[in-house]
Image (cartoon, rainbow, N blue to C red; front, side):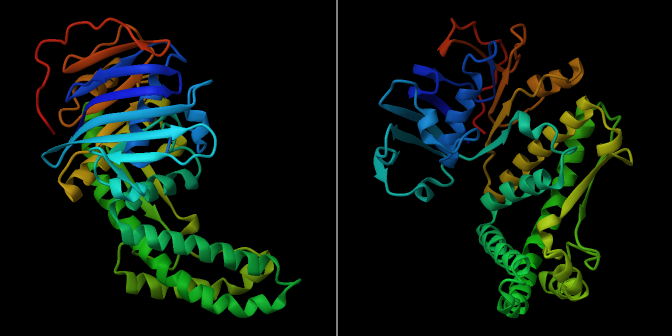
Length: 380
């Protein structure tokens, strides 16, 4: 899966932009605030129907413009197809097109262009709170497993309803009568979430460990361990078994939930621990090690996506080179040997030997240097 070309009109700081891309690494270089990340955001929007830095489409339209248009030619599953989106200032709904045919919903474009995104907010995901690590798993699984996405949506709805019942139990004591019903459904959907996350993390660990070992020159071993409620001793067990253990946990924490007026049982507080050479990364890893491990997770996510769909998604890496030592920077630039990759960085001297360097200034492409010899022509 790859993007052959991209055209933008009135998107962010781009008045007009056209560019063809290398099937391998595309290094986007420029100073800050020149439009590098905007290019990745355009690709991400065409892929997912949403930007990763804002939920407001009005912010994606160039200041003073009436509309923004994004279009790309994509090669996936052995076919060339075109994606086109037009966003309008004001309340007029956006228009979506696939190979020239107007579509009524974003879901009709699913799978045409898949992407794995790594942005600065992800760089410290292994040292931040548990919510960021759950989001990393949930975002990937919602793309790969429709049943998981449905279970997650239902669990979040039940959690909000149960939390409200506990919070308002003195003002509305009748709401407590619904707690057993909430617990039953939360145990059922929660078991799906825990089992799916744990099994995915197990596969993610296998592949991420390989990438991280290569990154570190064989010096570091990465481990990932899923953490959930105490009664679930094997989170990767069949969902029916996890369901029974969740019911036990709910029963033992019922009084504590009433007293705290909070939902204390379920996968909404689950986490996973990352360790290097047996030491927890939260406490002992350097900035460079943390970034390397986080990048390894994204490369592993891409591997699992390929294993599931048969196609490598396009990899988007925004500002990942800073704080990496020269050897790890070289790995990112020149040793990702499969699929199409987009990398942004501010260092003008950086180039890739196995792809294309695109220099951006003020929303425009600077004159292109010749593609380095030996650039790949594969179509992954």
